[in-house]
Image (cartoon, rainbow over all chains, first blue to last red; front, side):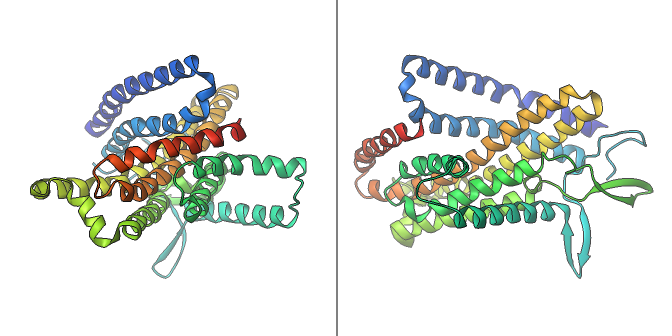
Length: 72
Length: 280
């Protein structure tokens, strides 16, 4: 039972940071697109990579949550 | 460990792939069925489309070629040696894409065998999407790891590669060497965990939505998972490509500080702008 509460807290708190980070990343990318729509090809790959790296933090929280439920 | 409390729960979640049968010490799990299925789909598609390919593409052929050309455009923008690793990155992309999308087919995860486990009957699905098994994603990440370390060693030599790990001010080596080593190894973990976490979480999300709500709501999430499956395949292959690019690009910067790298970057951007019109 404590494991489930801890897992909920882990993913809930762990999602705050990546959420903010993704918001910043997407807003900046949209801003860049708005300024220069022709640059979409150049923006896309670094954008996807940046999003993936930001999201990885959330995935770590998910993994910790899964560990707490299934193993801890 | 049984996850659901008592009977009645429709959501069955298992973090590891369940074994279907075993040949000696070797257990054949349901995620292997998913991986085999993805391989077969890719092999048949490759055989079918290369046999019928023509120089002037038909409508179907150009539909198949479009994503591959797009991917090749991105690859060609990375380094001048892109032909050396293009096949690997493309294989990563196609394999993960097909494996992810197989997990969304109806029947995957719902058709299975009933097993007695800790006194209660549990449905063991016949097919599990391969990327929802950490063994599979870790295997892919290890392939990528070996390849980008190999490229680093091939371009810089063993000494050069170790020199990159030691870092620039030589007296900081005792501090920096473990950090660089861990950051190399963490790529392995983050590559595999990202793919596994996303696909597994997607499966759990779909199962939860199917159990809680009616027909229309799960369909929305199914569409979402379709996009996520594509994005994760793209992310894995692009990250593998970036790691290889970094391993190769270190050579140009090596010995001359950062001047070489800065000289390199406009050329890379030039490649990308060349590739961009063909993507659009």
